Every structure is written in C-alpha cells, then in structure tokens.
Length: 109
Image: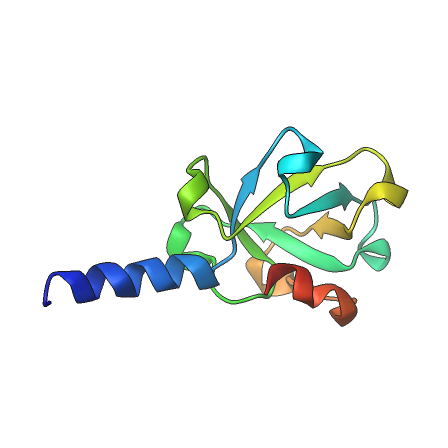
C-alpha cells in the first residue's frame, strides 16, 4: 500500500493540472481552440509552462505533453475562430494568465 499511494497521488495531480495534448484531428479533441491576436478577444489568457509542476489548477498555465495518458485535455487548434469552443491568447508571463470569459471555464474542469 505504501508504494501504491504515491502513484495514486501523482496520478490525481496529473488529472487536475492543465496538461494539454494537441491532436491533429478535431474528432479526437475534447474541444477546439483558436489563437486570437489580442488579449481582449480571448476567453482565456494562456502561458506555456516548461515544467509539469507549474501547470496547476485551471488558470491558464498549460503544459503541453506528447503522452496521451498524462493529458487532462486534448485540443485541436482550428484556423476558423467561429468553429472554436475556446479562444486563447498567449501571454509572456505566468502571472498574466487567467479567465476573461468564466462561462468557458467548464471546458478545462
């Protein structure tokens, strides 16, 4: 049991964190994302973190992974803003992340 508990704890952390896997077919995605040109047009301000431990909570700090089983969400980046479920803007600092449209927050819960 002592060996199993840390593994279960780490698995739960992975599921709550914003580990994102980019997929190349919209049918395989949990939702579609469009990257906007201005922060005022975004639903979510996103910062790409370099380390998995920095992607905690549901506040726009995304860690991109190639490992499907680690991904909390699979996203498809679309070139059509009207087909997107979520519009994001990449920010330059992890302190600038956050929701601008909290009605879309359920997509990453």
